Image (cartoon, rainbow, N blue to C red):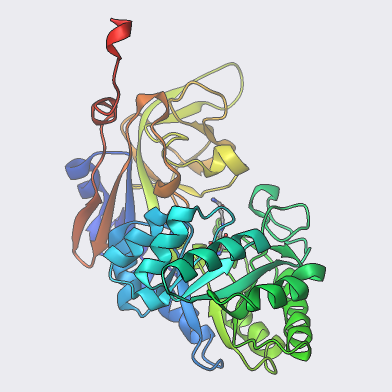
Length: 420
Ligand code: LLP
């Protein structure tokens, strides 16, 4: 459930009319609902209620906006970060260092050091090489890094190939059949406290079976590690739970996910950790856009050209992703149209042959389920600048990220003397 509903015929975020935000902030603009974020955070935590003190770290990559992170910090969430920049954000937003997990296949020397100096709770090590590098840095600084070894369980997550991470051909983690040996070798390093295993097989999962299969393999690995004399106190089960992108679409609920996790892990005797991203933020945001014009072309449906583009919301262009597209003031009339942005490539298409609310030039509309992997994946392609972000709370809202104009981006560029 989200808080983007029609009130008196006008789409609102909680109690704020999207017309008002369009007039005051301009379009395109992302709009997040505080109540929806908080609700999702609680629903997910409640779904894990059968577990003993689970650790929940929001996957910052899904929505790194400081205001969004602050809301999740106040809900007791930690952060799963994958870069020094995300780590800085999580700390700035008020997440406790010990609640931060550092994931990612390419942490640099500087990032490993940054994590150590910040005193983060856990590094998810993605290779034996990374483990030795972290061990050396930790020793040099008189520290001990708490670590989990990320394993690649070779499970097909049955999601889009670009967001699948748990197949053997993907770059993530260490192969399961080598994991026990690598863990034992890294456990001998003074700079490391090897305490757990981690797994994340992909994102936008629409069934629980691949997760259950992967978790089963992790359970077997924990047994194997203990039999070999290693201590395992933590298991990080990653994120990945999908969300409905189409009205009426049925996906496994957080409660079903939580019940499956409780069943599969009941004998593990570890503290479980989670890294949800999309399931928390996805349906807590929309991208508000204005129709520039409708353009007839040949005999097919018209092209509705909106002022948002693939640089603002990359998912349709990148993954062929579906985002529901609704008028802010629907008249009841419907149309079939191609929904496109102004960028000069055919990939800048949000939807083909989409049945949607009838729209004419000047009308406002939203792409729904844009709260995760939306603004954070924006670029300034075609010198369009960076899209603004707003947060609604009841009957008030705030701009939580300024629009960055193309001019400001240009200010960071130089033409060297020797070209003049
Ligand atoms: N943990 C790790 C290690 C991850 O790599 C990810 C996502 C997550 C947690 C959070 O997964 P979630 O709960 O959000 O599914 N840009 C793509 C999604 C990329 C996901 C990358 N990793 C999209 O727009 O669909």
